[in-house]
Length: 359
Image (cartoon, rainbow, N blue to C red; front, side):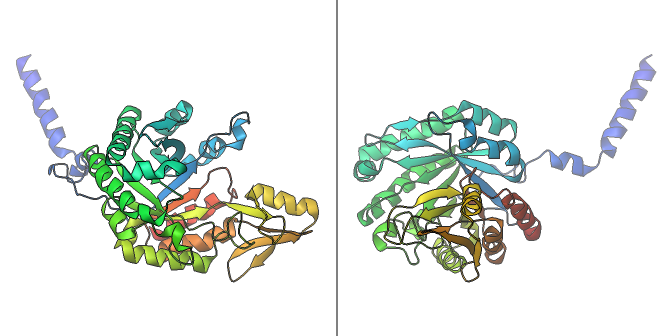
């Protein structure tokens, strides 16, 4: 009996030696034998980041008005979502409108969660200029990240005055090391620089912010916004100019995520009367209802149509293809779609094709 056990043991040892080394490597993380992690995260050029901005349904509205149906149907096409849930208040506290359903779904489907954190606009002075409040805000962000076990954060501080530049850079310089201790990804959304009023974009020091974030998400949309004169939300030339500036100032294309709009605007007239935001579906349905022919602006590479005194500019899969081409041309880290639920369903085919082309 003893000899039998020895024989079995010998056979097991031989079998273990014959297992291909590749099998064991698959279970190891590259570089796991060397504890020190790199100071900054870098995107894998062969695997693009595809983030969808997620918005809950507005109170009192049905679930389909938000982003969940798109997340449910197309989660396989995304690497992560950035839920629009958290706001920093003037005292440094963090308010939330999170959805546990979405957190559970994302974790189940292995979709990364990058919590979107906005500022309370009229209290930006306190948040960015008062060191005590800034530190309190950062502590609350760290606490939320630990409690919710999200994969990272997306800082989206908007409507900042030019004099907030130093405060925003200081905020990120204090926040970033704490996130890196937790091995979390840090994205900061920034306004574009080209053909944008300086009072809108001056607070964003790309070079300084790039040092204290993993990625700059350049919001290359709202070239023509709701209270501006009618025109493209994001013309191809304008997008590319801004992407080039971001690459230059950030120091690497792999630090840049391109914002990709999925919406449009319906301007009632040319007198800067506030436009209505429209989804792709609303735009095409409206054109059909009023009998308007959808046209293509070959210079801007976007669709538009007119009816009565109205002018409608929006985005579809074809306009997205031209912008997605910039990801390959400039070897960007990836894209961030604003927002899930507004897009042309064929956008996901265009994204899948882009991902194939860059591999």
